[in-house]
Length: 569
Image (cartoon, rainbow, N blue to C red; front, side, top):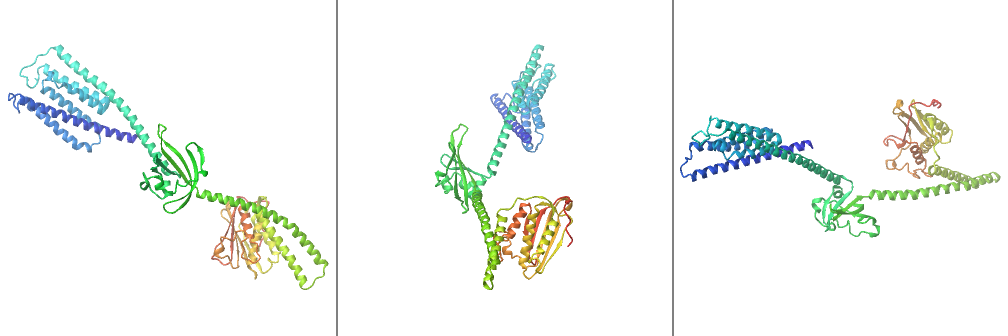
């Protein structure tokens, strides 16, 4: 702001100097014209180039010449104050010479000192006015004294003029008093005008900056804004409104709102209007932009009033709420699915009781009855299917209604080693399946021991089922920053057929399975448990042979001293 004020001061000084040069040219032109008229009316009694007027013409001509020089050099000047002082001092000398040429003490041009002092006060304020008044007083006093003592005589006078001492003193006192009084009054007024002008400049700059800030805010808010006048014609539109509507301001300015945006305010469902207060309301509407893009917009309209509270038009605000409406629909669907899931979990829990009763009853009948051949096979099929159905319900309940985490610090090496030991004692774990491990030094994390065992159990089971003829499973572990408790990364790879690229994004979805008779809940349960622990699970490199599951969990700085080290494998 200070820089802009200083620039404004320079501009004002330059303008005042230009006015001074203009007025100087006017004065000397009038003086030149008066001299010519005087000689014409004198009817030859005064020679045109006589001794009386030759000095006057030289003074006028030299003033014209200097003014021309000033006009040429003023655009290149930097120190305008010094330039102004040079011009003013020359003007004082010119007026003094004019006074001397036109009668000395009795010259009618003595009054010219006064407007020059006023001009100095306007251009250079109080200090400039007093300096020019002082110079004027000195030069005028010298001229009067020289004439009084007979050293020089006014041009046009052939004899030495006699003046009394009192007259000389009175003349000098009155003129010098007038000079300083004018300097004081004009300087005071100039300072007041300067102060008022500076305040006005500051207010104008503040207003301009506020206007710019207001325009920037209006242009950068993420809300569309359109203002219309009383006739419904568009007078402004911000950047967000242009983006949503696909129309620029120069395309729609002073167009009627219904012509520029025909599907914006037409066919408003007044039943959907929400009246917040008189003159302000809200509504939602689907809007199609000029590019064919569909939006769900939330509108509000309020009156545009002047400083006298007179309504000058309307302000239309709108936001793109398409994503909000989609999220609301997703929440509604999620709520319905949550209710359905709770109902399904309760239903599955209730089914387990009759299944258990049926399984127990059939097992008793199987022991008491002597069945052979096909009947015995049928009885075994019933028992196997009841057992499979029970496992399906158990997996579903584990996914739909997981148990609360019982967190404590544990060593992942112990979790994985114990899960491997249990898995090796199952029929699928002993069927030509080899498991190799490579653990890091520190694998301490916070978690639920039983649920993390369930994670690795499901992954080992999936790998074994993918390799019915047998194969290899490798478990490797890395800690990103052991000394600072980094992320523990566990990679489980098998030598099975792998996972196709097309289904990589679906393997963790509930009930998605590529195996005949699979429940599709194994990996979805893995994902749920790991995410509940604050970790992540992903499918590894699809280009590598076999399948790779990557699990990441947060580690800790220090190992748990209570955790037993993983047994050597």
